[in-house]
Every structure is written in C-alpha cells, then in structure tokens.
Image (cartoon, rainbow, N blue to C red; front, top):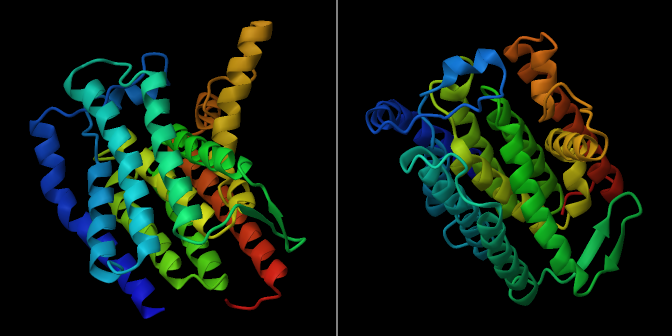
Length: 325
C-alpha cells in the first residue's frame, strides 16, 4: 500500500515541478489553444493559453512507473498503451497548434492509430498476460467467454474511452478532475481484485492528473490538449481491460459516457430532424449556455464522477463479498 502512495506522490511531484518551466516555454513557442468559433463567448478569453500540457502528465506517469514498477510486465504494458494513445494526441496537437491546420489529424488517421493500439494491446493481454477472452459480469459474479468478439470489445473500449475523455476536456479542470477521481476509484478496485501493481498504476495516473489540476483549475494556466486527454483515456481503458472490469467502466466513467452520448444524440437529432437536443454539446457546454458559471459546471461534474465511482466501488465490493484478492 505504501508503494502505491509513493508512486502517486512521485507522479504528482514531477508534474508540479515541471509546470513552472513548461508553461512559459510553451508561451514562448506560441503553442496556444485554438478556441472553437461556435463555442461559448466566455471561452474567447482562453485563446492563446498554452496547450499540449499533457506532455507533463505523461512525463509524471513515466517517471513514477519507471521508479516504482519498472519490473512489472502489466504496468509496462499499461504505460506503453498510455504513451501510444498520447502520441496520437501529440501529433493531433502538433498539426493544430504548430502547423496551424485547425482540424488536426483526420478522423480516419486517428482511427487507424487507435486500431493499431487496440489490436496490439488486445493481442498482448490474451497471448502473454493470461487475460483470456472472458468478460466478468459483476453482480452475477459470472463470466462469459467472448472468444474473438473480445478483441472487438477491446477496440471499442479503447476508441470509446479515449474519445470520451477527449470530449470532456472542454472546461478548466474538468477532464483532469474527473479522470483523477475515476483513476482513484479504479486503484481501489484493482486492489480489491488482488492486482496491487495495476492499482499502483491507476494511483500514479491519478497523482499525475491531480498535479496537472493545480495549474489547470480555473482560471487555467495551461491545457492538456489531445496529448493529455487521449493518454488519460487510454490508461483508463487499458486498466479496465487488465482488471477484467470492462462492464464497470461505463459506471465509474459515467461522466465520460454522458459527454460522449450527448454528442452522439446531438448529431443524430440534427441530421434526422434538423433540431438540437442540447443548447450545445458536449453536455458541459449545455449547462454553460444555460447560464451556469464554468466553475459550477465543473464542480457538478466532479461530484457526479465521485458518486458514479462510489457506485462502481460498491458493485465490486458486493460482487466479491468484500474480500481482497
């Protein structure tokens, strides 16, 4: 348990130490945020705020993992997946911020990268990690062998989670805070399920996200960009698969699900009826345009994330009878 705490503290410390140097450097390099033109008017003031801060999050994770868990095959796989997803985000950010191509990577290009990551991760966990292709069903405490369809599920989990976290990253501190909560809950879940090393990884990611939150809370001095949001989403998705808790992910990550579903519903409604369900999507913008201050929206989503996480934790405890391991 001490190792888990020290890992999280290390990741937190690395980010906090890097930020004072990284923020002015990104300013000088003119790596500033490009704000969507159709977004809330209050967001115009955010234009030019340094982005690509996800590099600090990934750095914190890397240093802590290599310091405390370098011998763990499972954690190394989680780290590789996190970095691979972050790399896609970095390329996307670089194209948008440095090359000034507003749309970044094309959807097909991004999807291709995610397919490669999903296939590599799924193949590794089933062939070398002893993960198998069984899907654990909490509550019933039963398993279903999905066979080949398990690999399809992993693909949707990785693609869905990375993009859902990315969509959540629209307000100061929103993605960093909700991710830290989800990772903290998942650290406890992994510990209960007898996977202390994976628990340590989740704690490290939570610590790194919290370190970033120090500088990303309102008014944000830096944004994580796609580099950070895709890396965090990849870490969450990969960890859920390794702990066999894929069905718990929509519960613990309910905020991310709500954000993604709001976009899907908005697009589907507009294309079929010409009407919008929400004032704006993702969901957090709907509340903003309803007159809620940004900080109030963020606090509400954090609270929702905590409640959802505790529900997920309760499901695990109920399914295992409170036994550890």
